[in-house]
Length: 238
Image (cartoon, rainbow, N blue to C red; front, top):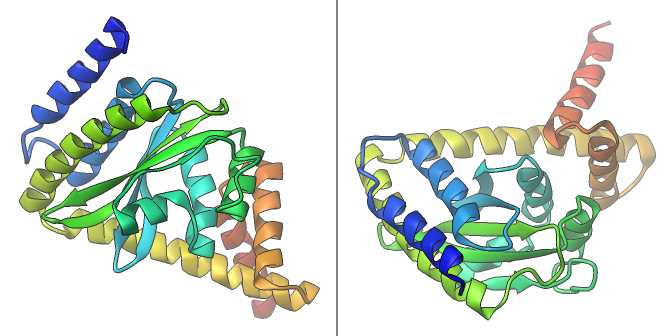
């Protein structure tokens, strides 16, 4: 590791160690962890943090809006590297989203957004798995064994910071974030049902319709879904 990268990692770890429970909300602590992650891990263009509560995932914070848009695909299908990283509590890497065949739908969505490699590391708080720290790159094979070692050091320290924040704030912020995520999923499910009824297609095909519209209009998928639901509800009222 170069001297500059070593210093960047050291500074990020020091910043995490310096977090004082109560100085920031749980959400702000999570956001700081995500932002420090980009600085700590060379090759990472963006990061996001996936939280799992009763197996219900959400991208709680992110450094770029591309992250939750991609992640929504694995949440929808129940299959993806950040989900497996959290559930199995080990690191998963993808060297090429174009060639990897473990999580086909997720990889296709990532590649469509210009993300060609990634690394997902487990996070734990209060002695239990809570999610994953995800690093994304616009380049192929951006993350090596050395990057994984650095990422694991960072993720362990981040877990300590999150455990302290969670213990201080309790589950209030986390519950609110999960509630918002579930509301978004409910709207997406409604929109999928509308599309399935109109086109006579499968749930997966309906989701692809939503995803393509999101990409085409550069609008969040949940907003596209909400618009479809609102249009149908408006027609029923007239």
